[in-house]
Length: 76
Image (tube, rainbow, N blue to C red; front, top):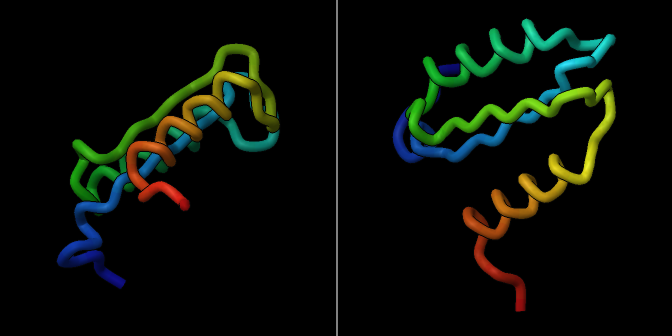
């Protein structure tokens, strides 16, 4: 259904490897554009990682950690 109210302000981090053989980078780019049309585009971040396949890398995990630290309250 449509996204409305406070949900339009949700922060989104989308990560993608530029060498992913299962989900081509083009599909990641199309997905991020669709997300930007649904929520506040200023709150959508799309990161690509050079040489990364359908996996993860330390740079991606550091970006995820930064995103979580920024957008979620600390755990006591």
